[in-house]
Amino acid sequence: MDTLFTLAYEIGSLYVIVAIGWIIRRKGLISEHGQRAFTTLLLYIALPCLIISSMHMPFQYEQAYGALIMFVLSIYIMGGTLFLSRFITRKLTLPINRRAVFENVILFGNQGFIGMVIILQLFGQEGVLFASVFNLIYYVLMWTYAIYIMNPEELPDSKAKFILKNPGFLATIIGFVLFIFPVQIPAFIIEPVATIGQMTVPLSMIMIGMMISTVTFSKAIVYMKDIFVYIAVFIRLFMYPIVFFLPLLLFNLPFELFMIACLLSATPSPATISMYAQVYGGDMEFSAVVVFFSTLLSVVSIPIVYLVFLLLM
Image 1 (cartoon, rainbow, N blue to C red):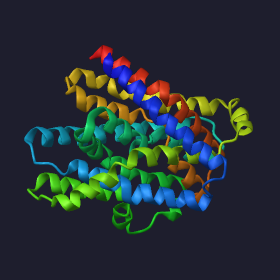
Image 2: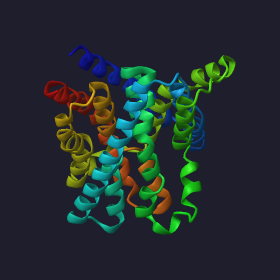
Image 3: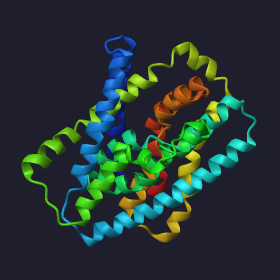
Image 4: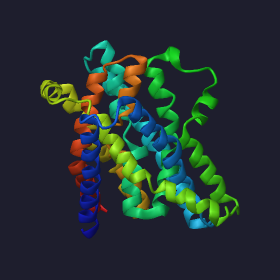
């Protein structure tokens, strides 16, 4: 139960930083161009440094076994949610420009930023190692399938190169190589990398705040009458974590691995989908509102999901 309070406290603290990011952007202290630079710094520098430094540790069979479990869980979760997201989207009567956006916001969580930060706060560097492995399939789908359903014409022929441009995916591969093989990076190199990686926590939360600042109060009020917003948020925050992790209780998985996968899968919709909607065509306002509401509600929903499985395990 102490861990539950720790989780609630940590998430609450993180969302104070989100509020700061929201204020910064709403007050115009950072321009849209500055926000893009901010995102680039986080995506291409800070997050990869966090992943690599977290996976730079002596090889241990227990950790290798845990990484294998996380990879299998990733295939199960992402494969299952992809199938169900496609099925649900086809069954609902959605406007044409909203179908792909709806499928994306319920399929993908903010595993790369909010998820990694929560795992780091709760489970430390070793938790980030397992979370990075779990996110491998996520990164591949986010940079291929998510774009493909928005606009099939925009996905390049060289899909392998396109995936490798994803800094999170590439950093995980590099980190995994360092973990498996007895390669020790000199301290004067890895220590600065680790220091830069520590920037991920505040930078990612400030970035989330800036991204959701595009949702005005009037826009939020209008979309509060839209039933599809509630459906999307419910599926993303509650339905998928419960539906896909309840059966896993039968397998007696290690608590830490189970919770890392579960908490990552319970994260709110990512702002990346709003960017895709803007670039590739789609209902950008709807995606931004779902991201906004799911991000706000995740302060409560993530501890609830954690508590449910804590009581059941």
